[in-house]
Length: 340
Image (cartoon, rainbow, N blue to C red; front, side, top):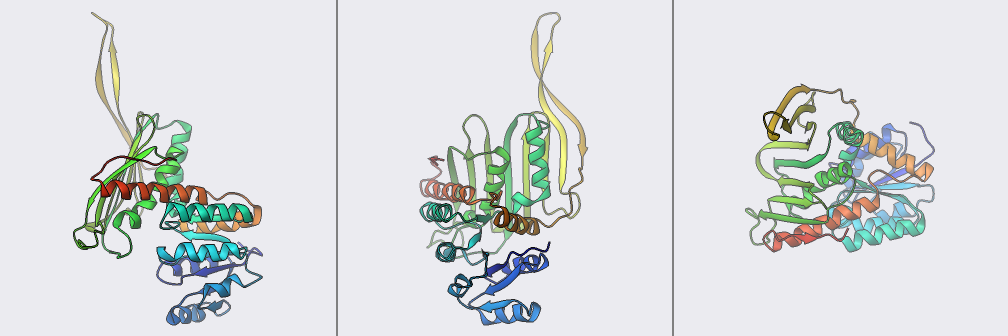
């Protein structure tokens, strides 16, 4: 994908290296920034034509730079993205967009004022399995969507600046937003802090998104689990879908299962519930890397002015949901209205 677009990156660490690999493969990587000299040495060794610097201000000052990916720890998202947007750079910020709804909204308004792309790294929105489920919902193949359940668990990576919900749930929240086509009216959350008890940093959380009407979604997040789990289930009136991202080959299973009302006409009109169980289909899912598709969307939106799938407004709503869930956590699961 050869373009004239030039992209920089802030944060060349573990996840940042994946962005570097994809941006370089797309022919757009122009500069990389990190405060760690060893990280910059790695960039210079692997990609000798890429400019390096240790301060985001240097990227902001590069006149020939079109956009920047911010892959720093979450506390740095807001100040770095604000600096770059004020310098006229399109921004792609890793999830979550910021640590508060107020700062997330400020970045959205700044990008809108400057007519700049603001994109958030909700990578699952570019996963072909999620795209497949979205097509099934939009076509009516699943029937009425009753609920969505998601589990994201592993032993580590335990963080000290955010709880397991802020670290893991943004992925699943973004999928629910995308699949259901909107944001929940209220949320409730419970959890426990087992390791960092004094700081009350929750290691496991159970989040429920309440949509207007009967739809809801449940999201379990844990970094204290013996197994690595990445599982999303969508239950509809006609079919049910299981997306297991840990399955190396067959990530999607479509179950022709449901519960129907069975009508009887003789001897007297009556009805009863009947469980329906049919075939299990394993559809073909395109073997593409979601992060590459995400980077391609960022480049495309810079070039055309289009709105990214994982745009700033959606990222703001994601942060607002997390903030409301935090409030619910502090009040033993009391539902909190999101105002979205």
